[in-house]
Structures are given as C-alpha cells and as structure tokens.
Length: 317
Image 1: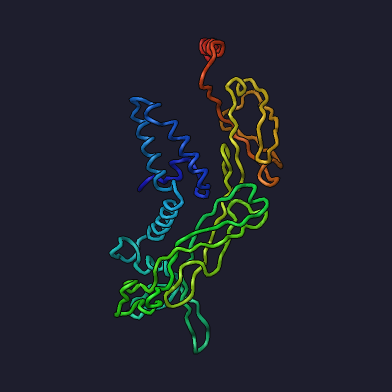
Image 2: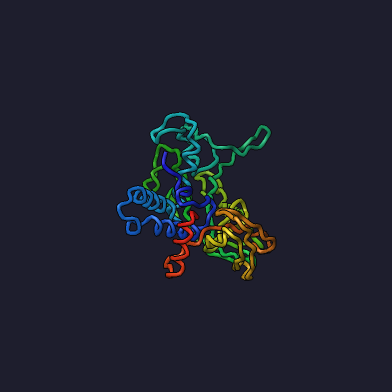
C-alpha cells in the first residue's frame, strides 16, 4: 500500500493548497541532499517528500488523487471482478453517473433510484455529485466573498444528447457513453463568517446523467491558516519557536495572533517541545487559538553564544 501523501507531508486532508506547499518547502529544505551529504536516510526521506508533493502539490493533481482514493476505498472490500480490477464495474461507472436505471443494453449499473409509489412508479436518473475544495483567506471568511471556481464535469453529449447511452448504436463523439467531459466556471458565494470545513452545495452543478438530471457540486471551504499555523479538528494551531534556555528556566515571549494583535505569553519553567497553551478569543473570528511550542534553532551563533552552549554541554545539559 502506498504511503499517504498527506501524512508524508504532515498535513491534514482538509489543509489548504497553500498549507501543503509551505509544508513541502519546509521539509524539502530540511532533508535536501545538499544539506545532508552522504546521509542515505535523509535522501530517502527527501525522495518520499518529492513523491508526495507530486500527488497533491497542485489543485488538479490533488483532485485526481482524492478521487482515486475514494474509488479505492469503495472497492477495498472486493466485489465482482471487472476489467478495471477489484470492484463492481457498475460502481465504477456510477462514481460519475450517479443514480439511474438499467441501460438499454440490459446492464444494471446498480445506481440508486429515486422512486415514486403507486402503480405508475417512475425512476429519475441522477448524475453523481462532485466533491471539491475551495481555499480562501481568514479575512475573506470573516467578511464573506465571491470567488470564480472552475471544475470539470460530465454533460450530455452535444451530438446524441445522451441517447446513445447503453444503446447498440454508439455515438461517434461520446462512444456510447452519452456524456462528455466539459469545463465549467461559475461564481461561488462564500457567506460571511464561514468556518473551516464549511460545506457549500450547488445544486445541478455535478455530473449530468445522460438520461436524467445533474448531481450537485459539493464544495468544502478551506481557510488558509497562513504561515506557521494549521487547522486541527476545527481549531487553529500556531507554532511558536522558543529558545532552549527559555524552555528550561522559563521566561516570556511575544507572538502575533491571527487577529493582528501582539500577545505576551508566560513560558513556565520546564516547558517541553510540543506543549500547548490555549488563548481564548485570539483565534479566527474570536475563537480559541492553540499555541504549540517548538524549538528555536539559531542559524549563526555568536562567539558568546557558542561559549555559553559549550559550558552547558560540559555541565551535561
């Protein structure tokens, strides 16, 4: 089983594209071969970071990876064998076509059915929903915004208008699928006060069924936490680099919060890397902010700093 690229880059699956890029750049610098000469482990880690970024580093690549992952999850328990590997070929097709009925060729694609009771029961085929992500800034989420959004979806064939779906007489343009993949651009309105993970449903903007209606477009709003911050279970987490001396004997540090305010934090003696402090009212839109302490790594030591560190080393610290 391949390594999860999200886990490889240390980001959550609902991270913004910008957060993924920042995580990649940080790890790539840390494990770059030029910085770690003759270190086989670092070289291997660098290669895995590159591979992960190739899978989810762009919006298009990430969309393809997420869609493929959903397909694999659907078939992980097996099913009827098909030319596409494990799983039901009807389920594969229904990922795009959604609900429907038995095709004219007689093959049951196992679509869901929207039924009416009574003697004249009818079935309304419906295309599959499309899931996508939309990245906006924290300020845009607070005030609300409108964003141009482009995606690709299946629409009825412009030549046969879907009539060749399941028919022995195949359309030369869509090859009997009844649909074509086309690009679509629309304006998405994000309401004021939207939170990270907010779901927008745009009815009729999903895949179009060749014999029925269109599915919906489901857009998950992702708030870019900005450099040094990330989202965890709906909470904003900000990393704060602390010198070792302050972690060991305590002290104070000033940070800039997402609201633009400077806040002074008391660091207790014996604070460890990874410890957290929750600041109420200093997160996004007045919510909580979790401050996570990391170790500040000086790049260029002065002579006095080096002498002091050598003294601490000699004392066993």
